[in-house]
Image (cartoon, rainbow, N blue to C red; front, side, top):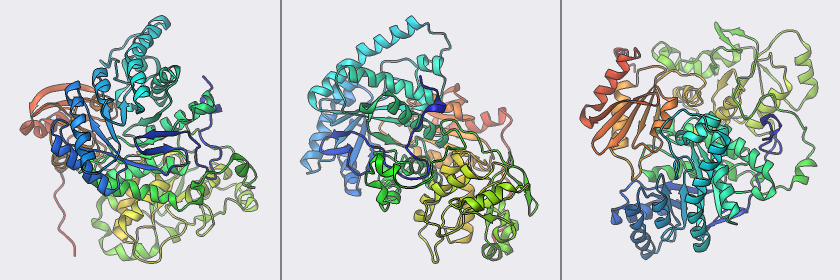
Length: 605
C-alpha cells in the first residue's frame, strides 16, 4: 500500500474544492455527482410495528429528511419492510427507504426486495467478532475472504438486478476479528474492511454504492474518512464513490450537536461528504434541523459548485505542505508560555480566552463558575495577530528568537479553518496559536444553534488537526454560554477532559431499553465524575467495540436486562434494568473512579 505520508485526501488544505464523485441513485434521490448534500435519519420504532414505522417515516420526511433508514435484525423483521413501504407509498410519500443490516445475510436478501437501499456493515456481515486474538496466515486470510465473497455476492447480484443502492458502512466499534488481528482497531482497518467488500461489488460490475467510516471519536472518524478518500484516489479515478458522513453515538443535547459538527462539519469543509446523518440520543425528528444547519454552513460558499482542478491550479493561492500528518493525530509542537498565570503551548492544557468586556460582565460570579471559568483575557495576553498571507509579517515573526502567542486578525477574506491552517503551516512551530471560532464576530445577539455549529466545526476541526494552544469563542454573544461552549468543544474534540464523557447511541428498532430516559438517569448519577468515559448502548451491534474507548459500558443485553462492561469486556450480565444504574455505580467504585458529588453551591442572582 502507498505509505500514508504520500497520500492526499483533498487537492489543497488551504482552499475549498468539493470532491468529485459518481452519482448513486437511491430510489428517486441522487447522491453524489452534482446533487446537494442529502440529509438522512433512522426511525426508532420496532420494525414489526407497521403503523408506528409508517408514521415515523412520514414525520421524518415532513421535517425534511431525504432518506430514511430502518433496522432489519432478522429475515422476519426484513419481511415487514414490504408492509412499511406500502404504507409509506400509500400516504403519497416517496422518500427512499434503507434497510440497516447487521450479522444476517438472509435479512439483507429479504430486505432488498422491498427497499431502495441496503446498508451492510463489513465488520459483522457474514464475519466474526468474538474478540479472539489469533494470527492469520496469508492462506487463512484469503480463505476467509473467499468465504465472505460467497456470502456477499448474492446480495450484490440481487441489488444489481433490482436497481437497489447499497452503503458499505464500516463502524469503528464493529470491526471483525480478522481485520482487528491484521490491522488493529484503526482507521486503516476500517478502510480495508470496506474496501474488501467494495472489491467484491466491483468484480461483479456493481457500482451503485456509497461508503461510510463512522466512529464515536471525532478524531478517529475524521482520520478514517480522510484515509478512505486517499485510498480511493490511489486505487484509480473510477473509485470515485460518494461518501456518507456520521459520528456514531454522538449523544444528546449540546454535547451531541458539538461532536457531530466537529466530525461532519470538518470533513464537509474539506469537500468530503455527499450525505450526512446526525446521530442524537433524542427523537429522530430532532436530528433533521441540526443536519440541515450543518449543511447550510456550506451552501453559502460558491465553492460548493464544482471547481475543475485547472481552476484551483490557476487560482494564485500558495502551495504549502501541511505541518502535520492528516491521517494520524499529533499535537503541533510549540514552546510553553505563561500568560496571566496560566501555562499554554507544548503539552499544557489548551486554554480558554475571553474578552475584557466579557470578563467584566462575569467578574461578580467567576468564583462560582466551576469548570467554565475564563482563564485569560484577550486584550491582556500580548497575542500578535498575523495575516498568514503576509510573508513579510510571518518572516519577521520567525526571524525573532522569542516565542510569541499568535492568531489570525479579524476581517481577512479567508475561511477560518484555512486561515489558521495557513498560519500553522508558515509560522515556526515554537509559536503557540490562539484559535478563534470566527474572523467576523457578530455585533448583536445570535441564535445559540447557529453559533454552536460553526464554532464547533471551525475550532474542533483545527484541534483534531493538532493545531491550537488556546481558543476564543465569540460567535455566541451570551457571556456564560460562550464559555460553556468553548469548554464543551474542547471536551468533544478530546482535547481537554473536564467532565464525564458519554458515548450514547441514537435509538433504533434494535434498542432494548429507553435510551433517552436511561441516558439522562446515568448523567444525573455520574455527571460529576471528571475524566470518566461511559458508553450507553441500546444493543450489542456496536456496543462491545465502542467500549474500547470507554471506561465503563451500559449495554442492552436482552429485553429488560443490562450487561455492564469495563472497557470492551463484559463483567456483569442480565442485570434487571431497575438495578442497573446502581450496579454501574458499584462497578465504577470497584475500579477506584467513583467520588461523591460535591455539595451544590447556593444559587447566585
